[in-house]
Structure formats: C-alpha cells, structure tokens
Amino acid sequence: MEVARQEAGYRPIHDRVHDFGEVEQTLNSKDRRLQASRCMDCGVPFCHWACPLGNKAPEWNDALFKGDWELAYKLLSATNPFPEFTGRVCPALCEKACVLNRFNHEPTTNRENEAAITETAFREGFVPVRHPERNGKKVAVIGAGPSGLAAAELLNMKGYAVTVFDKNEAPGGLLRYGIPNFKLNKAIINRRVDILKQEGIEFNCGEAVECDASFASKYDAVVIATGTPLPRDLKVPGRELKGVHFALEILSQQNRVLAGMEFSKEDRITAKGKDVLVIGGGDTGSDCIGTAHRQGALSVTQIEIMPRPIDGPDDPANPWPNFPRTFKTTSSHEEGCTRRWNINTLEFIGEDGKLTGVKVQEIDWKPNPEGGRPIMVEKGKPEIIKAELVLLAMGFFKPEHPQYPENVFICGDAANGPSLVVRALASGRDAAEKVDKYLSK
Image 1 (cartoon, rainbow, N blue to C red):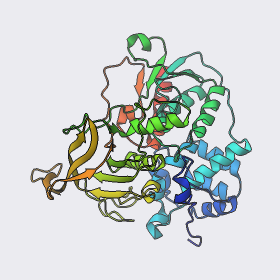
Image 2 (image 1 turned 45 degrees about the vertical axis):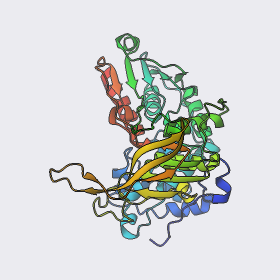
Image 3 (image 1 turned 120 degrees about the vertical axis):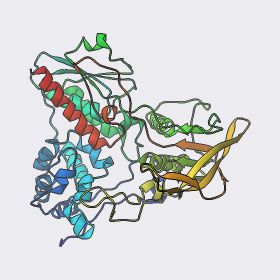
Image 4 (image 1 turned 90 degrees about the vertical axis):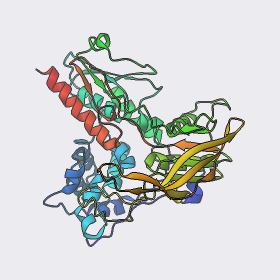
C-alpha cells in the first residue's frame, strides 16, 4: 500500500496506429520488481482462487521482487504452460479479485509482471527444452489453439507421443488468426511452437481431420480442441451486399497478410478510405476497430444492442471478488471510435450490390413479466449510418458434437463455448489429465 500501481501503458497513438507492432510497453526491471513488491501475500489469496489456471501469483511475485527471475518463471510455468500468451491477452481475473483492488482499486500488476517474467526467462535461457521418457502410447490432438496446445504440451511431458492436427497453415488457432498482431506478435507463438517441436510434438498443419471411429481407432486417445467455428450472423435484409463481413474474416486475413500471404484485390477485405461500422461491443469488436484504424479507415463506429455498462470500478450487481461488468475502454477505442448502445440493426442498404449504409434504430429494454430475457421495445426513429464496410462481431455459438468413441475427449471452446484464452488453457490441461487417467487404468 506504500507503492502506487504503475502500468507500463501503451505506445503513443500517433505512433502505433501506423503499424501492427504490439501497442503495450514495458517497465524497466527496477520498476517491475517494485510493482511485484506490492503483492501482500494475503492469507486468503483471492488471485489464486480467481485464476482458472490456479496461478500462484503471491509466490512468483515474491521471487520477482527479490530479483530471482528464474525461480519466478519456474513458479509461474508450474501452473501456466504459456504465460507469454496470458501475459498479453488475459483480462487478468486475478487482478479484479486482488485484495488491493478492493482496498483502493489499484491491484498488483499481475498480468504485466507475468509477461515480464516470461520475456526475461526466454532472453536469459531459463526456458528449458525437455525430453520426456516415452510410454509407448499415442494421442492425437485436433486443433492447435490454446486449449489444444496446452493439452498437447502436458500429454507430451507425461510421455505420450502427441500429434497435433490443424486445418490452418500454422499452429495457434485464434491466437494466430483472431487476435491482432498489435496485441500479440505472432513471433511469440512461433517461439513457443519451436520449443514444443523440439520436445517431440508433431504438428500436421493444413490438414482437416474428422474424428470418426476410424480415426479414433488409430490412437490410444484423441483430444478435440477445435474451438467455436460458427459465428453469430445478422440475418436482416441486405445481408448479401458486398462489404458485410464476419469479424474473423478481416482479422484472420490481416494476420495472414502480415505473415506474407497475398490476396487478390477482389478477395482483400480492407477498411482503407471507408466508413466502418462494427456491430458488437466485445473484445472482437475492439480488435476490428484497431485493425480498421491501421488499414486507413475514414471513420469507425461501434454499435451494441445491449445497454451501456455502468462506470466502474465497482459493479454492485457482480460484487467483489467476482469480475466486475463495467464500462471498458481499450487501446483501440482510444485511437478513435464513435460508440453507441441500445442500437438495433434493421437493414443493410446498398447500391449496385455494394454496401452504402446501415438502417438502425435506438431501442430500450423492459423487464419481462414472465422472467428471463428482457423485452426489446422501440424507442427512437430509424436512421441510417453511412458505411462501406460492416464487421459482425457478435460472438460465436457453442458447437454441438456427435457421440464419439470413449477414447475421445473435448476441451476448450469446443467443449464450453466461447470464452477466455486462460480458460482454454485450463480446459486443455484438465483434458490432458483426464486422458492420462483414462489410459493409466
């Protein structure tokens, strides 16, 4: 409580909007250790309770404070297989549950500390390449996203011969093809995948496989980690117009362009010189905003059908130590965006098959006398928002699965529906434990 919270902050807006480099900065090692000293090693560590991975933040914060970066990484990686990912893209559930957050809304900078520990570990050679003794059994992992990679890593360490299959050209799942480079540089993924390969995991990318009985019979166990591939659509008149896209279409394509892939002029999705409308108020919508700015959009507007969240930092409807559902401004929002809530989309409008605008209407919500979801009622008059590019960022559907053979296990978003990277890692780890228990009988 004697040291104030200090965040590293973002690169200046006028600098970062011209490239796709990571926007987040870092503190020097002295200030980072000082931030770690703020952890009070609470008698009841709510941070540990709130983290889906059960990260022992008090322990690795103490090691960091004392300058033992190697021990800090050992403690961190004991529960988190890929702290370089969560250190960049996790909403830090641990920080919202931190006792200091309750005391003065200045929790320990766990997420930034986590990233700093991991980068130091890679730089100083504290990340080992391990070669486990093999047990003679084979496991296939379908899907190379965070949950699949986590399951593969743990199973490999337990001695199984692990083969990872993925339909995309490189491993990473949404880490590579959904999260923009300005939040997660893809070299960070490549660096970890190189280690996993050296440790014996085989990757078969660009290969879509179906987990039927024939495929499952070739392995002692199969882990399905295929995520949530089906996005929510907005089936209103004009949906077929050129210029209306799912968010992941532009996000994945932009990441591929940065990786060196080329697209024809007809296939290229770009916001350059266009008025852009993002429909959906979550993190994916925010990623679309930042991408649109970097592509050279004329303007960016974001609309959300639900009401505006309350201003924080407290959320009476979801009190501490639970995660507060409060108004959030991301680095992409800071770069410029008109934001509106309680807006319903009525129609996409166009000329000669191309999008020119979107008809919307302000609405309100009233309690449902029968309980359940509130009832939407009209409030304002219909209006048209000028737009040549619309990005649908309304989330994803939880996938449905057929009946699989008993040696097949499902994890991550494929099992639980769309969620956080940290929860995907935890689910992949749990699936690996279940596989090991099943094959050890």
